[in-house]
Image 1: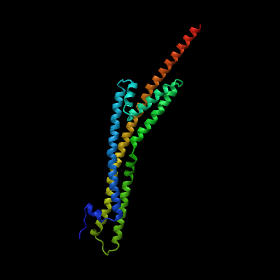
Image 2: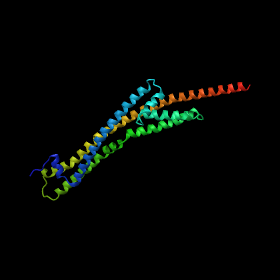
Image 3: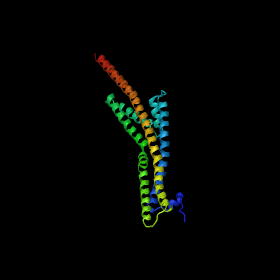
Image 4: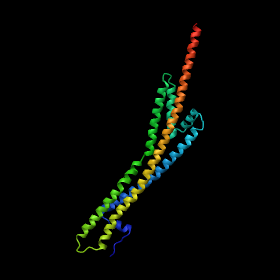
Amino acid sequence: MEADMSFIGLFLEASLVVKAVMILLVLMSILSWALIIQRRKILNAAQQNALAFEERFWSGVDLAKLYKEVSARGGKASGTEHLFHSGFREFARLRQTRSMDPVSVMSGTQRAMRVAHSREVDNLEKNLSVLATIGSISPYIGLFGTVWGIMNSFIALGSVQQATLQMVAPGIAEALIATAIGLFAAIPAVIAYNKFSNQVASIDGNYINFAEEFTGILQRQAVTGSTQASSNSASGAQATREQEA
């Protein structure tokens, strides 16, 4: 009776360990593709949203008006919008404190934007480590299944007087399938991880550049506001002295 050399036939004839390895690798491959689809949608949306908001930001709109527009979304700001919302909110809050100098105001504003930036990058990098893990360990898991299957094949050959190719081929084939499934799970995961990592780095660079440019704008406003306040204070003092005289 000839052995069934199809994938299903070889799977059914494999040992329990090799079957478990194959099932595990198939599940890892499914998880990998699910994460690839999810991350691709999220990262592409993040890029598009960043470009759209920066276009709106540099269109000359009043920053206070833009802040109200972002706040009206009910805390759904993300990406560059989140950096802007966090920074401008802290800037406006600190400027209301008359005792704070421009340096302290900008220090608090930058701190708020750094926190927002860190959270956004964490969201972008979410589950990328899972893809990296799948890409790293899948070939080794498949290799373990292959080694186990070949080992069992040679052990079985030791109990017969004469070994033939028909006796050896099915056992080796079912063992090699485990390696093939491991590569099938690993290759897309590695490719996607490298692509997404570069995409995250590009988006992160956009966030950093926007934060620096936005900080410069707020710093000029802080210095201008401080100068006007000092001028008003000096004018008031001069008027008081004239009245006393």
